[in-house]
Image 1 (cartoon, rainbow, N blue to C red):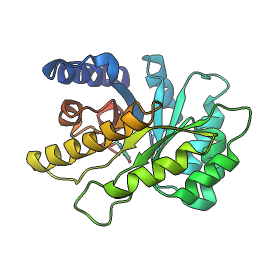
Image 2: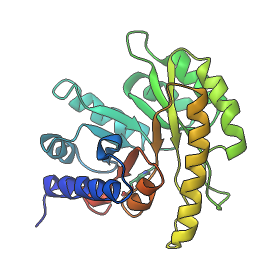
Image 3: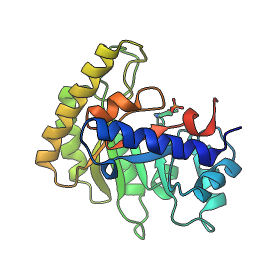
Length: 228
Ligand SMILES: *Cc1c(COP(=O)(O)O)cnc(C)c1O
């Protein structure tokens, strides 16, 4: 039976191999462990294996876990990666270190206003809808610049980059096309904003192709914690 520690080490070697294949340094690529729906004991097991970055999708579940773990594990970095309604922004502003799914100016404004003054600015990524599926959330490619401008004017937010969830498909060519489109938008944004350094793309099923296209953060859930 493999343990969480084994699977973290396997995920890390997949990152190393994928990076090596495209002549990138694996030091540029962070592993975000997506612990949604999984118990606190799993997070502790991952922590003990050296994992420090954790991603949660649901506001209340994330808040509960952060409250339970913060005192004993203050060096965990908490990333919110789920859809966020405007009436729940306060919980994210008060508890999380990162927010990956920003796609509305109104939410940005609220997160800015609700960020406690004793905390560092909230690190944010703009979620881009690069998928063919209209139902997916995120801003369209042509609206990234406008939202970036709004975020950059809000002192309690720090614009770190872009995030995307590509079309769920086995079509490698389509995946490749979507990831490389996101990389292009990312490179443009990076030229304008020196704080931009994060391209959050790649999950358990598509991390290799994401890394080949410049991902700097892969979000891995099931490959570490098992199926949900
Ligand atoms: C659940 C989730 C992941 C992790 O997906 P796996 O396929 O379990 O690796 C990554 N990103 C987001 C936004 C998610 O909701």
